[in-house]
Length: 327
Ligand SMILES: [Zn+2]
Image (cartoon, rainbow, N blue to C red; front, top):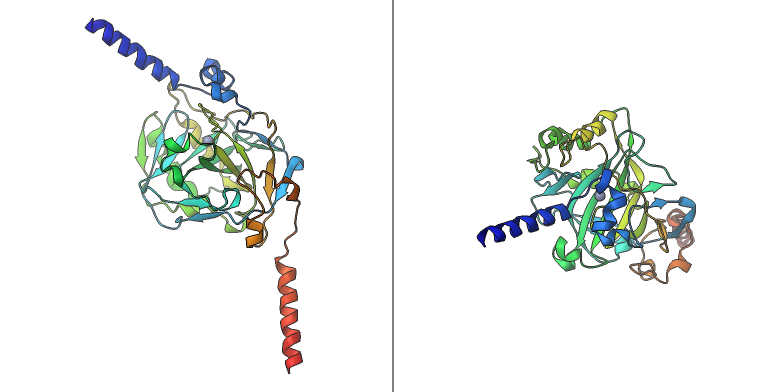
């Protein structure tokens, strides 16, 4: 009796373990995920190929990251599918605005996807073009209080996606992260970063381009592929040297082999619309003209050129005229 209970327990735990397994090749590769995880064959999956001629232009309120200038202790772990950075603070950074409207999302973790060579590795493609790496910064909706609860709701997550290209020079912003990679090559290993990290350095490398992005509704790109994410893909590209990027390929997967690639192939767009933000000066009227999932807004979404400068000149001109008239 005792033996059979132990056996049953062992079988159960083995099947649970297997249930969490997935890979990027072979019998557990992306084309097989749907067998074990039915949600991976949904209609609003990520990643996708973003075709610039097929996006709808919208002008959303400013996307804002809050708290990113406070240094925080952070650590990296190898979970067998990627390396993930988390901080020791519960609310190290908050995200709001843009397609999220006034809803607030809390930073949970960031991680990377890469390929076997410098010509592929990103998950989302732009005009069918693959980039050598993509970083995802994952935020959960504050109202849901935890990542686990947020995963149960279709507006549960907001994910910032950053695409990379190869540069001749190393990018010093990523040095502290890349430095710990050799120490966490084995699955399950983790290590704290030596110095406190400014999330702002990584999440907002260039404030001027922060409002230039594509956005669409999609899923987690790993099983169980839940369709709970508002994706925000920045158009600006980040830089990494070949050697910096190659360091990620030395990490090991659960089988002990090198994790040379960990990107999911693109999924059908189906009935979704990809939006492109056309930044304009924030005003309450802009804020009122769209909805979270952009329902009913598509007809208003025409490209609008920046009107900041002309208005400024007209206003200055008018002031000058009034001033001269008064003299
Ligand atoms: Zn990811």
